[in-house]
Image (cartoon, rainbow, N blue to C red; front, side, top):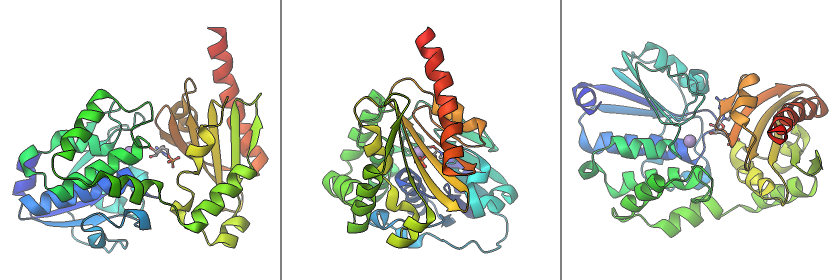
Length: 317
Ligand code: 5GP
Ligand code: MN
């Protein structure tokens, strides 16, 4: 891969729509790594940079507009389970001479010219770390990779955290990463509005299926009332998930009238990648998403029916 990079003159990088920590961390890690070690021109594209992630080196180099440019010699799709999730950057991926797909989603079909998809990795940043040459990683690149791992593992606590994840994170510490700044500054710290919306979502959450499923939703009226941006609800689903007795947590966000963005998390048994894939979404077994249409009750019924089917199967075994 690096041989091809060294022979390229123009490279593009993009992550998925509604970018999270792993997405931005991976994109900037690769941007920093290539610009620091190779002499090609690199453009990096992401829909928006959430405020808590702007601490990363060269976050101000990210393009949030997508001009029509000549095809890239190489394009990297990072943390993108399917090509459509590149959003407006999909056009670059389609036209590029060579497309690398680097990801860790089990539902990724492998749409690159060359694919590095490791469903066993906790984060795309972990996959990238394995691909990079240790001597070429700077502190700035290490910070981006570390942040990506921190975010996708919920600070090393989700079940996707393996020995290898910890070893990668441990190796990254040796580059001088300030872990407290990254963990507190980008993950735990919340704005006043983010805390308010968290409180509201928890207060209005409802339990169903004998307390095995917890659901909360944010309609467009509430989003407008608080002036929410896309990433302001990050973390809400994690707090719902740790409710005692709950197997599945669901957060619904109304994007357009009767169009709901679905975020799901499970704790032990329910495979959410399977469920969300049925509705055109995807993700991981314990964290997945999709978009569903209808009233909030239609959406809840659709999802709980699928969860019930899986839990029914589990208890029969
Ligand atoms: P989140 O709930 O944080 O938005 O997403 C959870 C996980 O599922 C993330 O790894 C995310 O990339 C993936 N995911 C969320 N929505 C979709 C979707 O519509 N399609 C696919 N393929 N993956 C998704
Ligand atoms: Mn990821």
